[in-house]
Amino acid sequence: QYDASELKASMKGLGTDEESLIEIVCSRNNEEMVEIKKVYRELFKKELEKDIAGDTSGNFAKLLLSLVQTKRDEPSNVVDYEKIDDDARSLYEAGVKRKGTDVTTWISIMSQRSVPHLQKVFERYKSYSPYDMKESIRKEVKGDLEKSFLTLVECFENKQLYFASRLGEAMKAKGAKEKVVTRIMVSRCEVDLMKIRTEFKRLHRRSLYQTIAEHTKGDYQVALLSLCGGDD
Image (cartoon, rainbow, N blue to C red; front, side, top):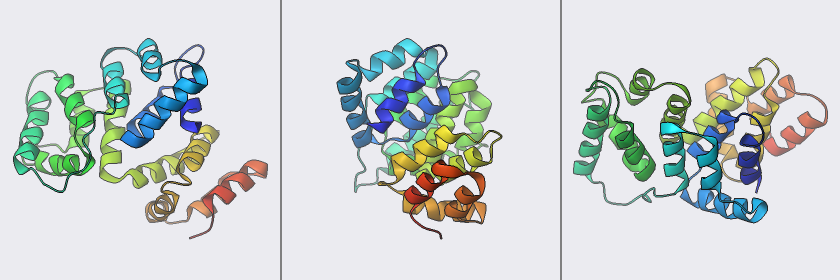
């Protein structure tokens, strides 16, 4: 319900809050996304896909809509090395190898393959491309599309590290981005917050609890510390 409301808020009124849209759509798995769409429909009597299509455009819209359609394969016990190699080569040939970028190929691979498969694809990709996947994205696309692809790759590689890094940036930002911090803490507290806490400490050399205590105050601080659950 929280995710659905946040998505609605990101598309309400003048201008779109692309950052929130990207974070939620690019970091949720199939199961979470199916639930978000159902709740969105119940709460707002509208289809999430329609609202996204009306609020975004071009390849950015195509990518978000592909992700919202939850066509991602579930992880399999069988490792298909041929498909890993094919996908890695396709990503390279659609981007770094050619002039311009065949974004459609990138979108279909990144929105349909399972996460363990993509982790192996990005590893294999390095044997074709002089740049790793994230460097390739930065070279090939710009703006919201670039941010979306980078978020996807970071979530495929280590989702909890992605959230730990977002939390650190949001709390240290001038005019701390309370919305980002609140959203991550609320939406992940029953999912993977313990792992996020571990990654946070590894990344920032101090615990999430201490960082919240240092960068926030009042009732807001009390609420966040209670969600955080403990010091590491």
